[in-house]
Image 1 (spheres, rainbow, N blue to C red):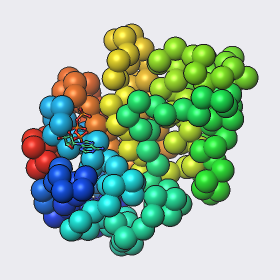
Image 2 (image 1 turned 30 degrees about the vertical axis):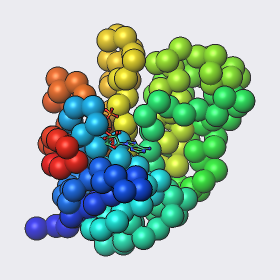
Image 3 (image 1 turned 30 degrees about the horizontal axis):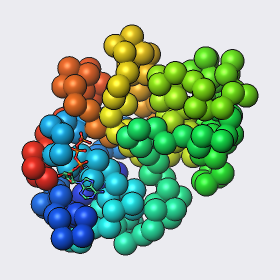
Image 4 (image 1 turned 45 degrees about the vertical axis):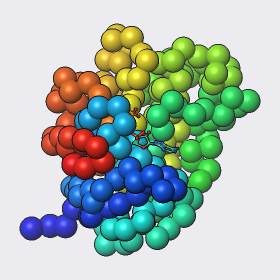
Length: 214
Ligand code: ATP
């Protein structure tokens, strides 16, 4: 049995005195797409934030290909190959679409399938809009920029937090259509999704979170 690429075990985390995660176990195998579903407040975003080093684990472990992640700072975790499409997109408002994308490549310079050209092939509308400020785009286009920015670091693991939040069904379809291509490029993917139907369409396995537990 081969080891999972990303392994989360007995993970506990929270905000100050408030505990949000209670001994979470999760495994992501190489080449897999895993979805995490669950109601508002279940702890999905906190789990993503703990994996990316924004929130510190108070107990348990996160291991990427044998290397501990939970002891590292956020920039080092990105450098190890874990990139995130954060909830709410969080584009840099003063930067153009292309500059937002380039930021993703700036932090982790490794050879891989993703370049500006490849992102523009994945989301052609971004090429037309590349000189516009990211914030001048529609919500769906902004989400494409956020996905592209994360991919520009050529991550081994891509975390996507609620890609479909606030978007129209036709736009969600376009964004989700990119996931199989991203998977085919070699990245392993975790998506957080409240829409179970959407999660079932793309995921190899699904974890359900409730009150900070799997
Ligand atoms: P949503 O779908 O609403 O994003 P979620 O499953 O991602 O929900 P989290 O955002 O991880 O859930 O929230 C888990 C718990 O942690 C909730 O009780 C929430 O109120 C709390 N929480 C989240 N962020 C913070 C914060 N910055 N400070 C304090 N408590 C927080």
